Image (cartoon, rainbow, N blue to C red; front, top):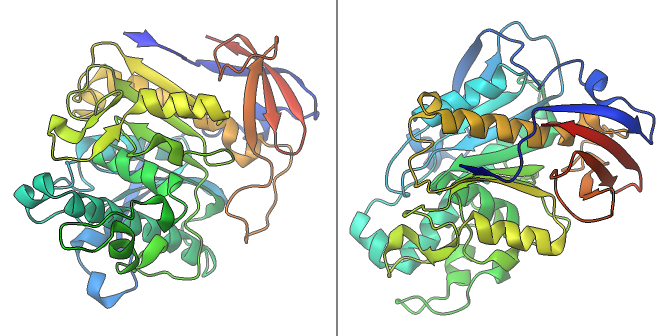
Length: 377
């Protein structure tokens, strides 16, 4: 097993802005400080035509928690866009793991393709299916922001929302984060003579038609378990950071670039290696855990597989420094999709960009401040 980065504990030796990160979070989000969680099932669309099981999600909250402004993670199940649901074991284990650390988490359903043969053979069907899933999850993000303005029943920080998933769910999360314009999509004609851009526009455009309109679907970061993107250069500077876990022998979603499922008629998907090469090239904050020789099965049994547990810990270490309680400037401006101060780059003491790869790391923020940290591995 090869690990590019593994963080066990952050200790702040010198914070140039005179803040102590661990104390700011009061011990939350590092360890599981809650023993149990509660689950609530809701429909996240306010549109009559989507009052169905495809638009349900399970929301997990820690029992006995009195805190407000809690970060939210939305997790999306896999299943090749043909099956699966919000009760897959990896989804449950993921949501419970982070809820016990003090997060609010949600496992979402979304629309699937109804015709397996057509999905495998038709790239038009593939584009539309993925786009429908993106539109659904965007509506789920907006559901929480809408609730924020109507009493904030889940007591979330609406400026700190992460989206992730496994397999197809990770593909959805990645495309949600990095497609910023319908013009990013191909303008070539589908078999019926309609361009992909037109098909998407006819399905509600960039935000979809699933409701909760008037609220932002922007997110603070992406979590990818064996995910991929159709076109790596859709990932641009100043976009959400991404943390990924992937086996480099994955035969379903290639670690590099290949048709999905290994089937020539399926759209090309570029996996975590290409995603993180692009992120490194443009200086986007990212990290990648690679399972050497790993296929597509490491997450499917949830906590029963030690690799999945390791992936959870890896993700937790990556997103913890991104939380507002770790930022020297935390705005309550609810019109902004992100907290004001964001981590934009890390380097070692020599100025080399390195993610969290060295023991002494410099953290650069968009407000010009710099933090020096020692990482104990």
